[in-house]
Image (cartoon, rainbow, N blue to C red; front, side):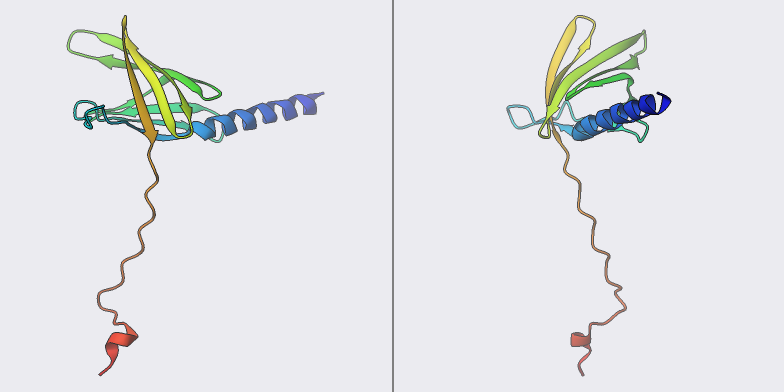
Length: 143
């Protein structure tokens, strides 16, 4: 019976990691309708570790903010971030969905809610190593 419970727990862990793995990545805020996003440059990174623990980070022009209470259900996610200003501390609640590299969602502070869309950031290809400037190509070595 113990082995069966262990097997079922492993299946649940692998399944949740696989599902979240589908939405894991760094998403960059899409441009506004006028083609700019000057006031809202940020990215959101969703991740899952080998133990199936979820994490999220929002990176703004000034801060890298770690999420609290990250929850994932299929392609839906939610989490909160605690912010501080000069007079108070407040929570920002994020929620949304991810499908085919496109994220849509909202964030709420108190009664106010704003909507956003973001796109999965493509990984930059590894740069080819630079050739040593002191090496000469055989073709160039002709005298």
